[in-house]
Amino acid sequence: SSDLVKLTAKRTYRVSMSAGDAEPTGKPAATKLHNGFNAVLGIFLGLGAFGGFPGALFQIRWLMVVPLLLILSTIACAAYLQARKFRDTSAETWYARYGEVPSMKLLWGFMYGACLGITGFSIVFHFPNALMNHYFSKGSPWDVYIREGDCIDHPIRSKGRCTEALCAATRAGDADFADRFCQEHPGTCIGLLKISSLDWAMMNCLGTCGCYGDEDPFNPLAASSPDVSLQCHKTNSCMFHQRMTMVAFPYIRYPSLIELHVVTGSFLMLFV
Image (cartoon, rainbow, N blue to C red; front, side, top):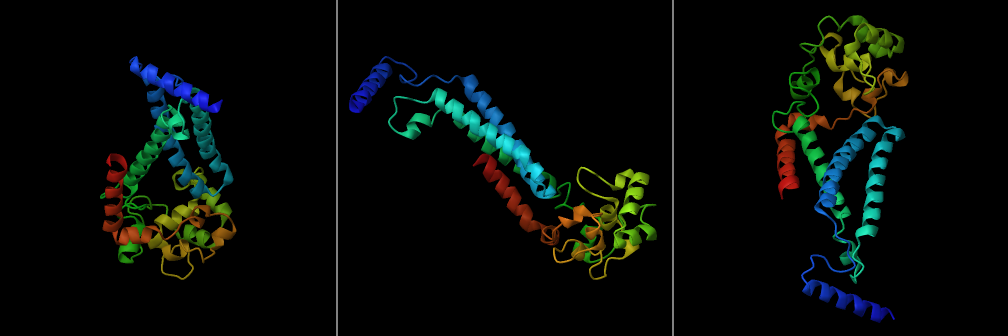
């Protein structure tokens, strides 16, 4: 009986194609609107998912993974429902049955959206003359320290803010001082990114506080080392720097390597 069903399906396919039908019998026609909507939706979901990965890694909190899981679940459900609705029942293989359903446009759009997100991230951080100069703006204290080994204050942000009291509080991990300083200078703390005023001091006050001491919070090598436990880490008053790594050091010292990688990689992802 199964052979008879397959034979009937094949004959129906031949008759429909000989009659000039655009689609074989047993395969519901997907309109251009279906395909276009799926492609655009996939691109937006890809952009959103790409933003979820660094967000989850940066915060290191399981709650940050929820948006990413919701996006992937949406894609899986949409792909399944459309595959069931638009499958070609006359096909003999699973690929022929599901390979041309609109959800394939959703999946391709998702992958291309992720590539767009990676390219946008690279333009901001790693392209030649990028805005963020491999995570640290040009002329910033960490940029100067990595390239030249000198300790300087930030030429703009530090004016009137880098004080000996702030240096001492950062070394002691004084959370109360950090809260008061944040209230007095709101621009030195960003709650959403878990950047406290002590984190701000370690980024901008290397000249006033000095940055050559071993296991000193103002020494970028110590502040970014996973083997060093600073006092502010113990008091949870410099949580941002607990996630800082030395990955940016070779990018700044040898920028041509990462810049060549991202420029060629972005071109290959988007156009090849």
